[in-house]
Image (cartoon, rainbow, N blue to C red; front, side, top):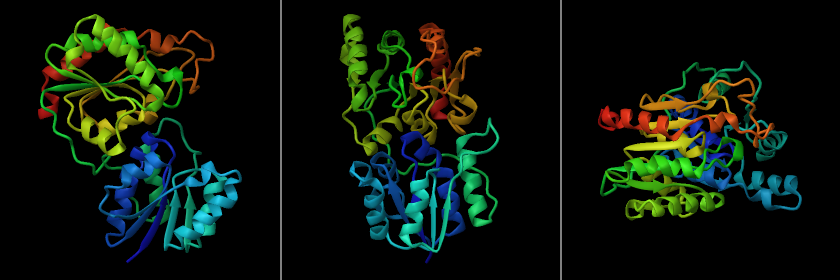
Length: 320
């Protein structure tokens, strides 16, 4: 049995995009025993994976002197036959070395632009193993949580920064168009509760609050996956939950502004649509709009999002 150590990316969306690469590893080494190491959200995402035998959360970030804490964690994790990191950081290289693993490899961000991140991760694994395999579909193993009625999810936040975020009033306008026929679920992390609350207030003023469920800051990773997996439609910015929706092939309207849609869009989700505008200043890849106009997101009107959402719902994409 081959013991494999995997350090996951910090961000939720990046961790989802590693799943084709990890599935390739499992196919190459079917009798492997996998240990995953990383941030809490990333490791929780993999806790349900049948090939994962051990989950270790990187607690070194809370330490006053991180290298020392990381070295202790590496020794605790111990030696593996193969150790790879999907993070391109000097501390990741040191972590693999300190673990005493036989073979260690760290992902490098360098390469041609315009290649999807899921492909980059799969290519990295191919180089390490010497087995050439393409990036398959995103795959998560948390089961769906059945919902009582047809449901639409909206995800107004984006942990990376404000530049990626659309506006609460426009999300509310879109949600109000569907609240008569669908339950509306609002998602978000602990830092996005206020934005979700603003949407709820607007919907309440429109008299449609009875079918609105604010889950922002209230879900575990398991629950987040379970709820999204049962939606009829998901409306979101470029975010971790967007990639979760892609893993479950949920019809999705994704709003892109400052980020590279060709590199971080909904990988292999044929039921997804991207809304974006080509501007001289985008994609700027900044956390906050550098010219303070936020034009790339401001140009996206609620009416066009509603139209695309209706097209996806009318096509019966979820049932295909």
